[in-house]
Structure formats: structure tokens, C-alpha cells
Image 1 (tube, one colour):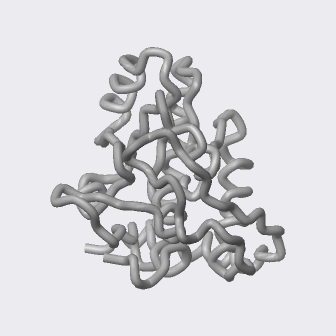
Image 2 (spheres, rainbow, N blue to C red; image 1 turned 90 degrees about the vertical axis):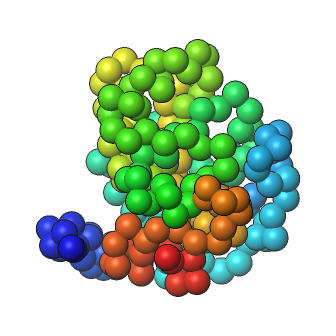
Length: 196
């Protein structure tokens, strides 16, 4: 059953983002990483002109940063440049996590599980992600309010990761699909070939 309030909220955000899409785009390129689970080089390492999806992401990124000012954000490029000593946590729902995840990520099903994971992290950097970065920013804010430090929200989260053709896994191994969260968010931010 479709959550009508979530679809309505996503539609309102989509129209406001579409109306404000004159924002600038900061293109990103993949860099090397020390982690064996993440790519050393990617095919998408060259810049191309920004698409409408890129512009929507840039506008959404600014909205997330304005809504969660106490949250530290990390670009995918920065994450890839040094993924060692990082605890990567997926804060999406179980159904979303089952479809795919970023290699090496662990799943936190709720704020209690998330707090427990972060409490046991040692000195490692903690990076949270969801579909586009909104729920992970909320989770990062929650951890910040609990006194956690060295916690970051991954800009663009798994949608941007997948759109850049970076690797995804599920229980069986490599996969090429991502749960779209809902129709509107999937259409706005996720390449159609990736939606499952």
C-alpha cells in the first residue's frame, strides 16, 4: 500500500526543487580508494554536462544542508579517497537494504541499533547513507544530539552512488538495482535502469 502522505510530501518537494533548479552544479569525479571493496577507478571519472537529475540533486543537497545545519556532510569523492577506518551504515528500511547496498555497509534498522553501532565504532569515522541523504541526515542529527562526533552524511547517498555506476551488492553478490524508495523519488533522482 502506498503511503499517500509520503508521496504527497515527495511531490511537493519535487515541484519546489524543480522550480528552484537554477542552482549551480558541482560535478564530482571518482577517485582512488584504499578499501578493497570499493573501486579504484570508475568509468564515470570524466565530467559531463549536468543533467536535470544532477541539478535536482544539487538543489536537494542545499536543502538538506540548510535543514540539518549541525550535520557534517561528505561527498562520494571524499569518501572514496579514504574509505579506510570508516564505518559505513545504511539507515534505509529493510526492504530497501535487501535490494542493494554499498559494499561494506552495515544496516541499522532503527535509532537504537544505530546508536549501538556508533557507540562501538572506536575512533573510526562513521558515514551514514539512505536513498538521497535526507533520512541519513536526520539520523546524523540524532547522533549529533546524543553527543556523537566524527559522524557524516553521505551526499547523494545510494542514488547518486548508483547513478555514477559505482558497485552495489545484495545477499547474492553484485547487483545493478536500487530500491526507488517510492515512485516520485525514484523518478526524480535515480536513473530508470537502476530502479527495482
